[in-house]
Length: 378
Ligand code: NAD
Image 1 (cartoon, rainbow, N blue to C red):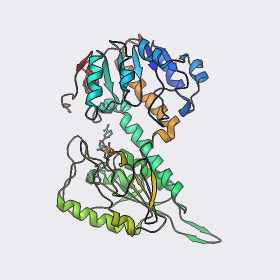
Image 2: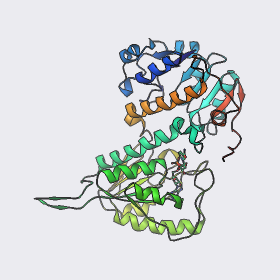
Image 3: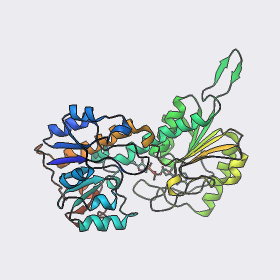
Image 4: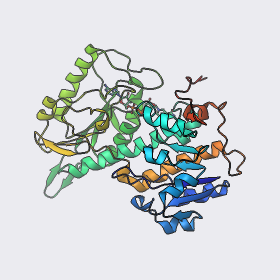
């Protein structure tokens, strides 16, 4: 079968769904690979590297879409692209079925099979190698710290110099999931004093192991809402949490927010008043900007200065590290392809009896199979 990789069309998207080193591995599995001309440029993978790896490079996106048996993509496809898919083809991409019912309908009508990278069962340890949400969130958390450091007018690490003593920067991370933990490790690595909070108390040990201090909310309430994810907290908890965050805002130099609740808008954690109470020159990076923001003053996709505080709401953090994110995403896709091609004969089989595969199969030969039944974990 042929795997086709089109150039991403979403404005500003620099990632690509494969990498030259992965093309070689896909060919070893028995597939032939076709890449659209220029598809990897944003990630510093040039056509020649793909050709050297054994891929065919073609100028026309239409050729990729209409001739490939399997399409690898990063962002969900546009309707014009869906219309060109070969019936019976398999599309492997981020899809977000809950947010994109029209897209799901159009894909089903096209009689294709769709494997959604956002639906990989994250609690199944066997599926971790395919978990692109985790690899992208990790890169996002790292990049959030880099963006903060770039906008911040001081060192992160403390220093004693001939010109005087410099205190370390203080960084507060709201939400210690995958992105938050990556941000903690990165900020601690740069030498900052790092504190973090999450509604799920179970992450406290992970925060500590990465060099951070876990700051508790003075209110007893369990924050796990099932499946390892967060829930909406009670009014009482939220009030106590606001009090603690207000205190941190006055003390720290940088706040990175990553808090999300599945199927709900992002919790509002940083009020305008808290921003105004921060030291001039402080920085907030709001990783929840796309989902409504954790900070009241965030503007998605922008860096704005309010009350002397730079508030960064970029929603393309993984794409800003395009070579790294493309390589990890391509690896996740390769691992997934290996699961679908156990015979290593260049043919994929979507085995719905396998609960990892069942989890991310959102359309099977034109039939919508999303959402998958809940996993039976041991
Ligand atoms: P996420 O992006 O949905 O949320 C980010 C973090 O925000 C979470 O830790 C959440 O608890 C926190 N949060 C939500 N509301 C908050 C609030 N009001 N105040 C403070 N923090 C708040 O989560 P994620 O990073 O995608 O991870 C979700 C879960 O999935 C985690 O438990 C993670 O360990 C788990 N996970 C497991 C695996 C695996 O075992 N294979 C892989 C990836 C993720």
